Image (cartoon, rainbow, N blue to C red; front, side, top):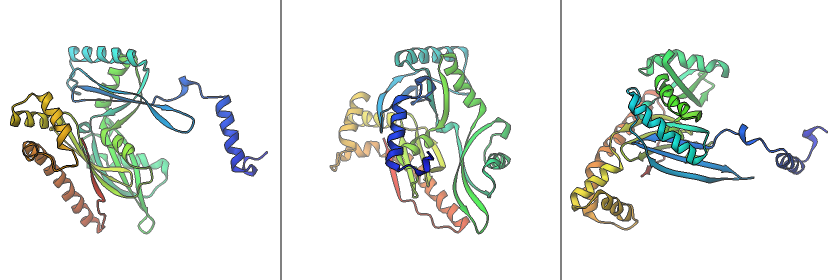
Length: 312
């Protein structure tokens, strides 16, 4: 029987029965364990497939040896491999989806002639050197088509680039630990996929405050079109609060979580303690918004940012 002639309800039941009777071998399913190594910590999150949904299977954050890509020595490499091996054994993990520090990435948006899908990558590779300080032969990149203009026969593309050296060094650590890296993603792209629906047509600005660094980026139609990093984060907030109130950093962290982001007006003294750190982040956010308005003027487009999302 031709599947096109089968009612949708029957097709659904048939697929469901086949999936139950002949499940895909677990060894062939790509890993759902995402791993981020930054700020001297390893963060992980694993999803579990149910029949019709995804649930969190495992997640956590553990201290990790300092890893500075580009200047790893034998000692720091050995420490990182040992820590990864121990973690992988504890989680029974053999493969991961790796998230790379946004500071290692370059992001840009560009218009190119609309061409066949198979020719797109070669066309972007040809203009990489004009947009990022990485030679095309040393670059690993991914792209997303944001829009196409039939009148001018052009496509607007968002491109994220990292160096092969950065990717290679991180992958080598996992390989030496017996863990396979099945994909690499940047912080901003990974967060964008988590925050926004696949077909979200709006433009968003995101500020993600991590322990020792922060990332600000713009998402247009689900694609990251600009990103920037700052070497300040939540630990700097804790230190500022601790200094102002004369308490330990651990106590400052508890105070921050309890009062800083409460719906009430909060403590003005607490706000004043954090203000210098937030001012640095605000300045970077302001620069990003100026960049966005400038780009719109160049292209004679009016694209308003719908909202600013703060992740702390």
